[in-house]
Structure formats: C-alpha cells, structure tokens
Length: 347
Image (tube, rainbow, N blue to C red):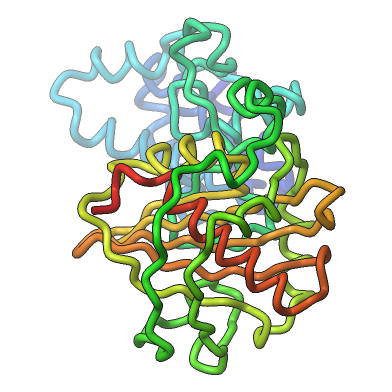
C-alpha cells in the first residue's frame, strides 16, 4: 500500500510547509520507484517537477536535480539503485560541527585557509609545535598603510647587550662627521602615512656635532611604548617641529627588516613596527632619554629606499628638553647614533 499512501501526500505537496518533510517525501518516492516502478513512475515525475521548482529550500531543489539527472543518465538502473538506496545517502542536517563548539569555530576562523577546516581541529592537534605558522593581526591603530606587509615587533624587554652597556652614552659610539643636509625637500609624499604634508615641514640643516656635546644624549635600555601611545605622541607634536633628513646615501642596504632593527636595538633605538614594500623598507622607531637628561621621547620614521640605497629620516621629539638649541643638538646626535649603528651600510 506504500505507493497509494505516498500518492495522497504528493497530491498535498503544496500545503507542506516543512522543507524536511518535503525532502523525506522526495527520498522515499525515489527509493520506492526501484521496488515498484510501474505504480510509482507517474508519482515520481510529479514530485520531481514540484521539488525542482521549489525555491523554499536549496537542499531540496539540489537533491531533486541530482535524482533527476541520475535517473536520466545512468546506463544501468542497478547502479542508480545502489546509489539511492545506499546507507551513505542518509545524512542528518540537524547539527554541523561548527555549531557544536563555538570556541572551536572561532579558532578555525583564524586558520581558515589551512587544513584545519578540513580536519575540523586546530593546527596544534596534528602539526608539531615548531612547524605551526603563527598568525598575527595588525592592530587598528597601526600607522603603516594597510597594503604594506607588516611585521609586528614586540615591545622591547631586557636587552642583554644594552644592559651590559648600562645605557649607551653617545660618547661610546664611533664618531663620524655629519654632512650638511640640503635645506630643500625632495618630492617625497607623506612618508609617515599620517596625512602630513611633508612639503610644509621645514628642514633644518644639522650642524656638525662635536665630541664634547655627545655626552648630552643617553637613551634608556628598557622602554615600553605600544601602538596607541606612539600614535598619540606623534599626533601631539606639530609638523613644524618635525625634522626631516632626506636621502642619506648608503653604499649597500639590508636584505630584511632585521638588518636594521637588531643594530639599532643595541643602541637603545627600538622598533614599534616595520614593513617591506616593493621599493623600500619602512620602520617606526622610538627611543627615550634617561630621566637625568630630560626623559623625552624621540619618534622616528626611517625609510630605506632600495634603488638606489638611501636612508630618509623623519624625527619628532616629544617631551624632554624644551630648549630649541639643546633639542636640535640632541636630534643631530640621534642621527649620528643611527648612522653609527648602521655603519655597515654607509660608505
């Protein structure tokens, strides 16, 4: 009596609201067709037509198309029968793995383009710890442009080199004469990415630094400055107080950001963030004077151009000594310190 029971339900197909009931009706009709083909043939055609035209459920629509194409294209009815009546066709759509564990789902989204979504488990469950790729999100306040590949750098902790040196005094750095910098700005466009008009900034000409004055700048070996603090300090300094040192010629250049960050760290100039672009390296640097010398911050953007190699610096002092002459002297010394730290790249 099964065909006659199903016939009544199929005739009332339009009144069925639950997609799961329609899907069950479709599956039962297709399976029954292989056992009672003469009686079910017309009913199957009717339910396939209804289901393929039904837009209330994508799953129902796709199943109906699958059954229709299977029955039409299968060269052997027994093959179609083995597929339709197989136990593997039975599947429950009540729950998905992602819905069962919200914590796991959140973890998988962080590793979306990996095998984790296929295995439905975190990488640590099937990859050795030393081979796991660490994913780092760029903070919203990050000053680098979004298109730049960013290498976040952890706020500096205890540096064995700088602790051993006890806070490097500038007199300990190799002394080099500073070449006067041209007073005009080249056609650089907004090096900092903060919307500053570089052409509106004055470019002081650094004066040669004498050995005696090098004692007035000493930087702390331990400084903590996060991205938000860096951004706030940078914005609080007027553009007119920024010092731009354009295009210091280099004989060679770094192959990665580490080639700049590590030498500068040894001289207590730390990196907040860095990135590599096709034509240049960008660094957001900072250092802080010892409290005895004013405790002011120096915020620095360094841009190393690749062809030809040259170093451009934009420096904003924040806090510390307010005497313009002394502040300018300290910035000149800071430039000399950076050149000393990166001495292998300068002629």
